[in-house]
Image: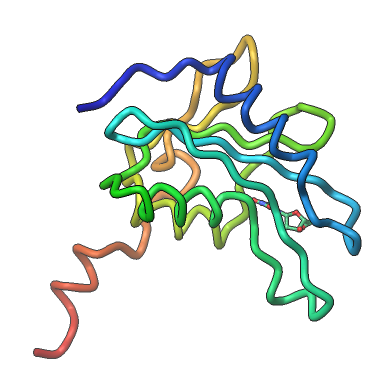
Length: 137
Ligand code: THU
């Protein structure tokens, strides 16, 4: 089952959870909210680490929550900074999202703009098709 995305609600959920961000190092609070293919909304924030490189992006939390709840994939995602404005998913998150939403995953581009697809943001991805076709058996 897949539901149409309520972008206003997704942005609001992302903005609300950004208040829980643990971002003492960058000072950038991030919230992300995703709609799953079974109609759930899951939201998460960034969690920074003193070692910097172990920081968890908000989108990774969303993916983890979606899977933990039994969803197969994300169908829509809003990412905002603490100011409520849309934020572009980082490169690593685009790759993580590709395995958990595919190129058709809709990404919010903000009020007044149509959503973009993950395929727009990450063209020619390394994906599971390539992995399965090219690995040594
Ligand atoms: N951040 C995210 O949570 N998602 C992104 O897609 C971009 C970056 C976080 C990680 C770090 O805590 C802060 O933003 C600055 O990079």
